[in-house]
Length: 291
Ligand SMILES: *[C@@H]1O[C@H](CO)[C@@H](O)[C@H](O)[C@H]1NC(C)=O
Ligand SMILES: *[C@@H]1O[C@H](CO)[C@@H](O)[C@H](O)[C@H]1NC(C)=O
Ligand SMILES: *[C@@H]1O[C@H](CO)[C@@H](O)[C@H](O)[C@H]1NC(C)=O
Ligand SMILES: *[C@@H]1O[C@H](CO)[C@@H](O)[C@H](O)[C@H]1NC(C)=O
Ligand SMILES: *[C@@H]1O[C@H](CO)[C@@H](O)[C@H](O)[C@H]1NC(C)=O
Ligand SMILES: *[C@@H]1O[C@H](CO)[C@@H](O)[C@H](O)[C@H]1NC(C)=O
Image (tube, rainbow, N blue to C red; front, side, top):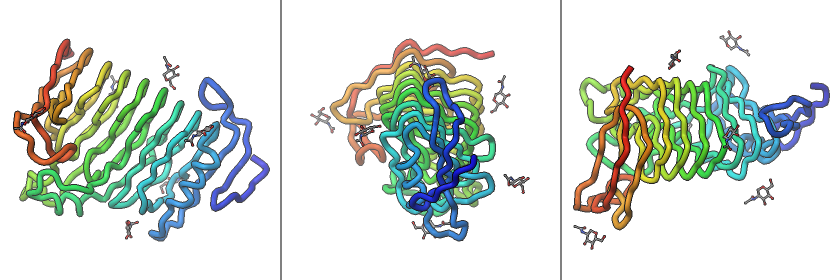
């Protein structure tokens, strides 16, 4: 690591390190953190522009990044993202798209959604709009997320949507409201993992203590494999909500482990994802294994 070049506000280092099976990740971007609450989103975007294809992006350990914009980081390809530091904000929403994306938190990485403000706002409002989802893989293929934690998510924690061949391993999702004992209802919609329109997803060795569904196989979820998932104080493992989208037919098959089936009735109340109803659906070939 000899040549150090400042490019935009991103530290870029040329290395010969090889990541993944396909190609060498030749360019490394270390994302700088202000560390004083100033928005680090522009530097993050610059890092993904420089190193999002055949590159290596590092959020350094013990750095805290403040994220004050929705970060839709699309068209990534063969990228290794080391999330060793903490990403923080009440409106944090990171969405990754592309092929061969690896996000590795090395057991120090944290995404902190500072959700208390949302839990208080959402109290008694079943489907409050605008609550951010801290981490999603959307239209991602052949990708891996492992070894990081999400804390205090404002809404669903970890969403996999329109994706294929995804491995999720050793992820810890926790959300607790300060006044949970007084208001046990105020953690609604803080699901752990949600899958939508995705195929071939493996979730393993993970932990969810977040108040709502532990893992929810939502419409269009096929070949979802869950292994060694610990669910504490959750609503359980949910198949559904089926029939949430009016006029759409939901199908789910080849799923494993204990499940409950969640449906909407024939009345349409609000609109998805906050509400819904009056769709149709089918669940089949669900097998349960208890060791
Ligand atoms: C991060 O902080 C912890 C605790 O203070 C310390 O043990 C560790 O060495 C630090 N890591 C780095 C890379 O500075
Ligand atoms: C979170 O972002 C908001 C703007 O969206 C900003 O006002 C606030 O200071 C940020 N908080 C932290 C801890 O970065
Ligand atoms: C995605 O990246 C490829 C090269 O990696 C480029 O050819 C293509 O134009 C990009 N697409 C978009 C929508 O940015
Ligand atoms: C699935 O993704 C993994 C991780 O990127 C990759 O190694 C594997 O080859 C992919 N499998 C298929 C069938 O493409
Ligand atoms: C199950 O996952 C936990 C992490 O949640 C891990 O500590 C444990 O070793 C795993 N157990 C097995 C049998 O792999
Ligand atoms: C349910 O949806 C159908 C169309 O799929 C519509 O014709 C019907 O009016 C809806 N019923 C209610 C109670 O919303």
